[in-house]
Every structure is written in structure tokens, then in C-alpha cells.
Length: 97
Image (cartoon, rainbow, N blue to C red; front, side, top):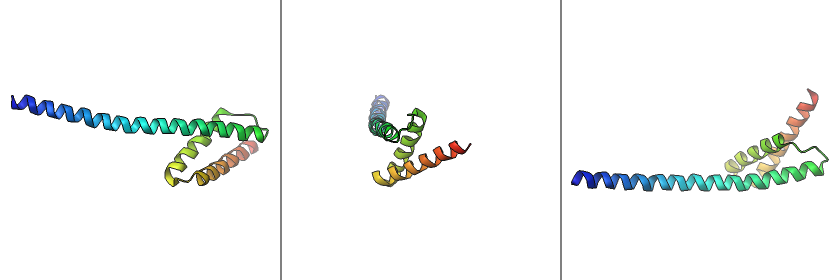
């Protein structure tokens, strides 16, 4: 009887632990999705203002860069500036090839 109570206790604790990890990663995923949606829209608008043809690949690369930088620096402006410069450099490099 003690063994089954112990096993049940362990089982319940594992479920609680799993749910807490799951909730954390779900929140991170939702946050990333919202940030990415706003970023993609912003990149699309900026490309249209610059009279460039919208490229989903460029937008995704830029937004991935932004998200990584934002998570490291917690500064919207720093992340935006760095990733805009990287994107411009990549575009200029590709034009030369």
C-alpha cells in the first residue's frame, strides 16, 4: 500500500512538473508568434515604402534576427537597427553576386 501511494505521489508530481514546463514553452511560443506577426507586417511595409519587391525569405530572416537580438538585449530599437543593417548588407552583397 505504501509503495502504491509513493508511486501515485511521484506520478502527480511529474504531471505538475510537465504542465509547468509546458505552460512556459507555450507562453514563449505565443509570444514569439505575436512578435513575429508584427515584425513581418512591419518588414513588408518598410519594403513597400522602399519600393522593393516583398520577399518572404528576407522578411523571415530579418524577423528571426530581430527576435534573437531582442531576447538578448531587451531593446526594441537596438534589435531593429542591427537587423535592418544586416538585411541591407545581405541585400547589397547579393546584388554584387
